[in-house]
Image (cartoon, rainbow, N blue to C red; front, side, top):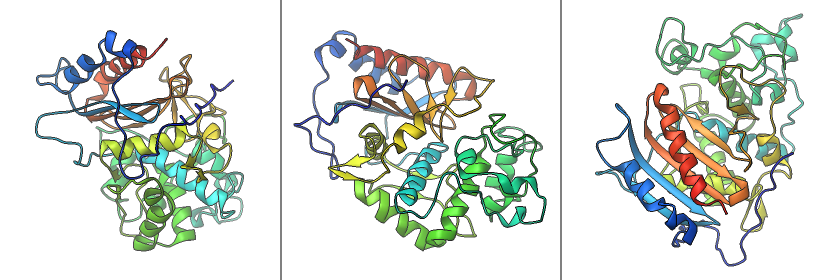
Length: 344
């Protein structure tokens, strides 16, 4: 059972131009919210080889706490890394609302066109759930085995979608969860075939998503084929990342206008048919699930980039920085302490 998304506060303006600011609620102040934010961006970090560049907390549609590492400010873009995958989920939703994509449709990849190719049965839904069954090694260290390094750099960097689609099928769809940046770029290639490559793709992103919610800083990166590298690259300010989070907390409606199909946010935060076995986190459709009692779901990127959405508390937490994978629990533990500041 999904935790209900919060209603829109009657006295809050959507931050298309700028975020309204407010003091944290008294309970958050008593529990030390300002100190948690200040400590996060201070140097030296408690966690070795880690840093927090930006930490933003928005509650009930207003920014209530915000901190930046020395030399960094609110107007500085931060990397998305895999948080771009959750943005891709929104773009798919926009095309579904326009009737130009269906989640149940099979993926018409030219690499799978040969008669009898079992990959031809893979659906968009299975790509979004990371349950396509396609082989993919999501390794960020060993270039010999890593498909993500090969795809983002060489030899697959010129056409990231084609690189991923060329990989074989290892499992029947919907039986195994395999987190894969490649599947995101296959989806992005599907979108490219609909809206056009390069500048045409960029104009579509801006007109249908970024400009609608005031993400003026959003800067997606494209490969040589004109494909948005939606697995990994959309640079934004923390405040603009928070705007994207607010779109999802508001059920895909922005200032009274529905941008995402009804039920699309719930689709993203509903557990996929097969779940990861190597982590305590759950997975939906291009969104991670915290599996707590508050319905928290989140976008997650390499080296500690996060947009946490907490429906039960109408809370958004954006974290940008550089945290090695082995220190991820340190960042998530701080986020959970911030969440606890807002509990009744």
